[in-house]
View 1 (tube, rainbow, N blue to C red):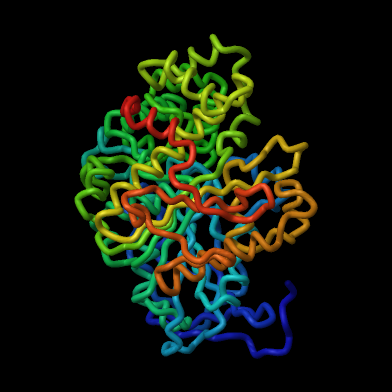
View 2 (cartoon, rainbow, N blue to C red):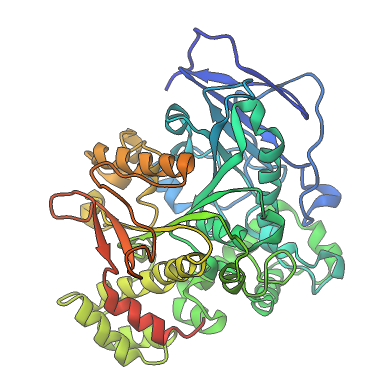
Length: 521
């Protein structure tokens, strides 16, 4: 989309200062708006501080720096140009059709990007918000601190840094406070805010539901392929920190503060390589398939409740409607990075790291998915353990307190000879209605179904606008428990003819297995 020259540059004045954006045809974009003070110097590894007022007219025609990070496989796959990195990275972006119109009262959607808490940004091309703005939404995308800068727990080195393992989440809270205070000047309604995210972004969304500091800052939520299981125990966070710091040679807080950005990234890369290269050892040592992520939020009892799932079940987010779901073949994206198990014996060995009865697990998955290879069964098993079951648990916890809508994204990409299938992250271009972007062909193929993208996008927009997601071609998307205690799940492109359909508790056999056998890792 090229910049239009038919408009005067959009100008918005907030309590922090005046910003000049850019028109993208009929949509105004404001990039690189600071929502917190730069987290550098004395603020490094500290919670976000309030943003600073600026003088004059701020150039918001581009984007701000993104959090320092190591190269991403997905970015390389999509051919994305590297973005400018800096520890001064707490910026957000706004797309709107109503700049400077505080009475417009448009629904607001705040996108929290994924990337395993260690990569990504709110300004990634796949997350640009023109289509949401054209659909009547003010779209906000957010950067937050990643990796060690956002999720390294240092409280055991220096008490005043206790809780630093959740600074990335606190950045998101600060961004939501900015939305509350300033989004009206961009045409948005601060009383009608939906947060949504994918992967680490969905894990963040889920944890925000439980966090006292986030209460009242949003009114609806969408969690795509991620839930509350992301949070580590304080013990695991300390163990992760010691492993990381051992790579740097830093033994006290002063030495940590003296580390350069490059040294932090190098240590992160070394830890990540060890875990990805030895998945069985990493799972055994750290207690979860998510252990390949060296940095995740911490259920520390400070910012995040010690038991986030119990907090949600007790009503921490009462009144917040929720859309939650996963993709059919989540784990296939990660299978590209590691060799699948070769036989049933190896499959049982992997399963034994996670469940108490691997023989029963193999039996259940062979019955649920007859004729599949051990590698494909492992993929479904890990899809369920890491993504599907945490989503089910989140849905069940929130159902007594607000309407909950559950989905599964079933459309299988033909890219890479079909190797990806309905893999992790494959739904994002459909949510943002950008499947026609030629750069995404490597991910979604040359002829992805535009009709499906429009339906998914419209469902997310209608949910943000009304609290009820509507899907073209279906009379109703029932809430969880609405049909006599059933488990209605909307399958996007689930039918043989490519049409969306409703299913009651699909693949109930494996869900029931996890309900009885989930080991608590």
